[in-house]
Image 1 (cartoon, rainbow, N blue to C red):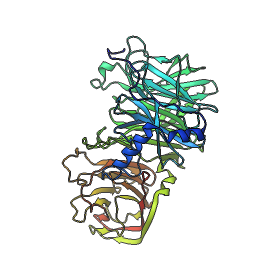
Image 2 (image 1 turned 90 degrees about the horizontal axis):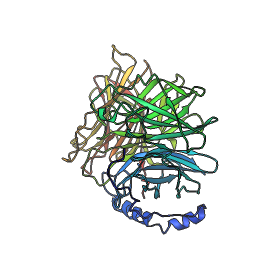
Image 3 (image 1 turned 180 degrees about the vertical axis):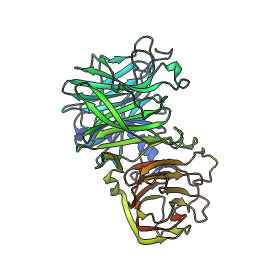
Image 4 (image 1 turned 120 degrees about the vertical axis):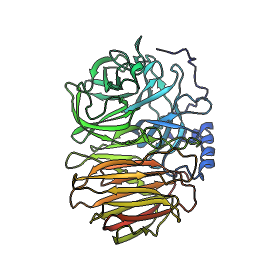
Length: 519
């Protein structure tokens, strides 16, 4: 149901472009938006709490990534932008040739008939890219683009193609709810998901019996859509009640399927299962969490995904800060790559092209770690890629400190808690930011901790990527954690390693400096 608000075109001046690449590049040189973005990037480059190789909005807040796709040899990422001239959601736009070096492009989709342009997805066809997104207080909308850099978007005259029905709202009502859509195509036509809670909006936040649901729709022409019921009628038993299914992405993964979604209650999920293309039903059996603490403060937010063309998935998530006083609000994670390992479990790592940012490196081999004896590594810095291999020995934990000051007053701890007799194959990865900053502006957050499988003689492969204000940690490609950090001291650059409660061996640690994508 529409509220009593003014529906009006965006106050941001819309720019239009020719279709051919060479002419587009020429005209982009005079883009007023890009001139403003470039100036803002230059002003922000030296801020100690702005990342140097994670993408963030040039002019303020960034929210959900949208419509990740590959078109005519380039990767495109759209995102929820809030231009200062009109801070309703627009689709911001960035382009990359390697999913690492992102370049700003002008805003892509502007609100006009809808109050705001909420999240959605993109489907690539031979001659066009189709965006399906949620038009605030109207329903789900279609827009298409066919030019070389996806600069010009045309909205479908039939919008909203899946309207919010009378008596409904965006997350409740029967028989279905309309919210962030995901669009794909099969031999039998187009399909779309709309994720929500199964229950009325008035109950949300008060009734924890509501369960996550992905509503399924079908169309032959993108204009007329039929409701097909729930994608997973049996529900998602591994996702607790009270979670919703916003920002769905549903792609093949190896010989199975994976459903990504964001819950406003507990954060991002990836669920693996089997999809029957005859019945169009998804049966989930494995779920991976990305958040383990509060949502919205130093946490992952919404996922966005696309296939890699070889059975795997590329995906990215936006992240939230724990400092409310920043002009920059939020940033994207690194681009991740997901595959299935030989046991059918999810394997997660940063995209290999991140190594194009490597500068000088330093390697330390075959170091015996004595209990509680801290080793300071020769290489230090605030933008680093750290890769290490450990053998557990008798230690109960191995601790890596990054962004550590020389006197130890600031430090971010990445800890591997090794298996116990009670759970001999379960270890835990923890990022503890309790001592990460001396600033009084920082919101408190408990340590982020996730379990992963570690077999009895298996070596520990730890990778920690540090980017000034962000720390991402991977272990054996089975788990990833992210935390936002805000070191205040110029000497908070050290890397140290310590075995706790017993001995361990570090077979190798290599630390690379990381270059900026904004220089």
